[in-house]
Amino acid sequence: MSADRPGFTGHRIVNIQDSLVSLTLFKSKALMNVSGPSIASIYRKTLSSPTSMIVIADSLQHPMENLSVKLGGSANGHNGIKSIIAALGGEMRFYRFRVGIGRDATDAAEYVMRKLSSHERQFWSCEGLDKIVSEIATIAGKTS
Image (tube, rainbow, N blue to C red; front, side, top):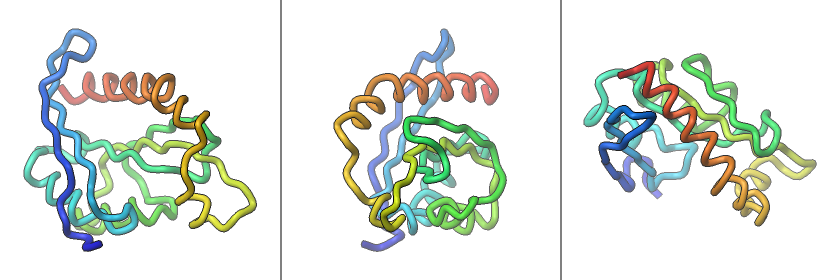
């Protein structure tokens, strides 16, 4: 799969905590590790500031069902975030939602590519999604 293939984009004006916010969601067709060029392309077309961008990525370093929000900084070894930073010309001042997937004794690449358990799917479609929406609302309040 080519790293420069576009993905799926949706744009809406949404009401978050009684404020209208312009929200663009993008899902790259490229694998996360090489998604930088397609994400950078959408970024340049739709955003005026890197702090208006949120990247959601898995994190082996965070416990399962944990959401950690970070603005800027290094990729912390995450190849997908490295790809995005490189494609943005070294720009690192974007938000990262690090979704904890924990880690077991299996190979890291194998573990990351596994299917989510039914419990994990249930969590991220309910309580986890609520956490993400709450963090988006917090960020929208800072950038509006």
